[in-house]
Length: 131
Image (cartoon, rainbow, N blue to C red):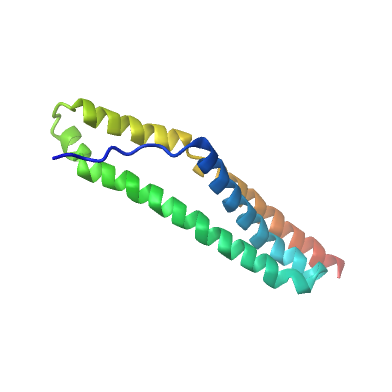
């Protein structure tokens, strides 16, 4: 059975979608501040965040599906559990999976979203206290 070997997308694609996700995360967390300072901009910022997240999470969904499909198509879990020898093609897929995880900016994305959330909550508390 011939399989399509997965491959990592170019770095510029990874960084572009990271930027889209980051802009969306900033937009959603900025709403709390914009609502108090410039309420007319809330809808624009909300749409920016929502449309960005639609693109970002569709991309992440496709990456996750691609990884899961590779694991299933090449029966990697079953082969490893049974201590079966991996073919050269299997090794290339394992290398793809590990390289894909290593190249991903997912962990940085989570850390930034966490930090932005803390900043947004703090900003709201401060702005509410200043009222």
